Image 1 (spheres, rainbow over the protein chains, first blue to last red):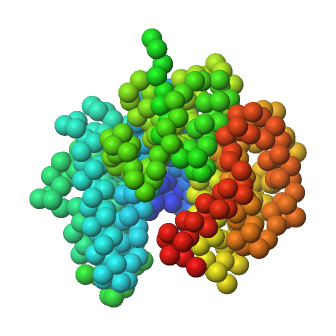
Image 2 (image 1 turned 180 degrees about the horizontal axis):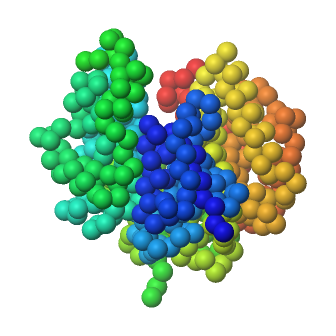
Image 3 (image 1 turned 45 degrees about the horizontal axis):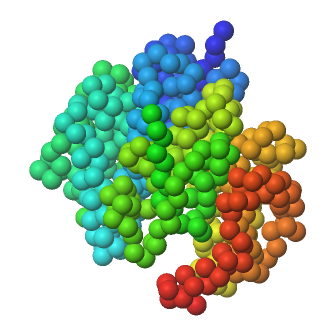
Amino acid sequence: MEEVKLLGWWVSPFSRRVELALKLKDLAHKSQLLLEYNPVHKKVPVLVHNGKTMAESLVILEYIDETWPNNPILPRNPYDKAMARFWAQFIEEKCNGGLWKIMWCKDEEERGKLVEEASQCFITLEGELKGNKFFGGEEIGMVDIAANFIGYWLGVVQEVSGMELVTRDKFPVLCKWMDEFVEHSVVKETLPPRDELHAEFEARLGAPSWKY
Amino acid sequence: MANELILLDTWVSPFGMRVRIALREKGIKFEYKEEDLTNKSDLLLKMNPIHKKIPVLIHNGKPVRESGIIVQYVDEVWHDKAPLLPSEPYPRAQARFWADFVDKKIYDTGRKIWTTKGDEQKSATEEFIGYLKTLEAELGAKPYFGGEKLGYVDVTMIPFYSWFHAYEVSGNFSIESNCPKLMAWAKRCMQHESVSKTLPDPKKVYEFILQLKKRLGIE
């Protein structure tokens, strides 16, 4: 009998990526989704499949796609796969990485520069949608899953901080993708409740000197 | 159908070296174009407008970017020749995890060693040795990270061997005395023509760093 266990943290988009992939592959009913592990104490997410453990959410996503080929999240063609990996990496390093730096930057001038850089990244990312519903085309794929922080968490961070980086008038195409993403029937099940997430971010980021 | 491969790269880049090693291991012919990163070619800017970085592999006119992604692409297209990634999903996940570790830790910490001084340099050096020791533990008793043969993690890490001398002189420490097993692994890899033909002379890498420091205005 197959045993699939996800050790994650309910707040973390990295953990939720893996949960989303498992749900897309119809594996949720036979998986244990344990989302109580705060990453301060233990590195998460960790996937355990029949006793084999692995870490790093994007590495885990590839493992899930290779092990359960139904409802693929990556294209099968090597070139298209390379493109999807490129965009997932871009989102991770430039978009999410950029946002993370902004969230923790105390210097106003420095933050201004970081916001400008991040805006450029979002313009580039928006261009990649190319009129499609999702980055994966008609259905969500690895790139959409990698962009989950932008799809949902970013909205909460912007509310808590007052930061207005991605707005509907500046990024109409990206915001439309965000709407589609959070409304997707499977994605919906993996999003932490907004008010609880808001409270969590308030607690962590809410120091007055940070808000602007 | 003819397979046209052009690699935009620069001789000293450990990221570019990964791609060259992978192509050579598989006996794949490619055209190498040396880029001057202070004066990037129109082709590079066209093929990688987002990052404007090398390496870029252009396969029948279509660009593939980011060294790890390029190596995986090459491994998938030419899967029957000297496979670099294991065939089973779990060992593949392990290989990707360790390649990701190398990517996140080695270059940036190494860079701190030759761009800083004093306490900052000392702690970068200690951090760097720590990461090498972690890799040594992962290698264990295996001849290569890939097991009996050169694999994805070996190809990802070995280019940095050509930079070890530069790190050692800059940071005034010895990698050999701290990590003898890793050095033995590196020398084993260098017995492969794909590696020895690709890695530059470490002394030339050190000279390059000295010139780069001057250009960047670092003491």
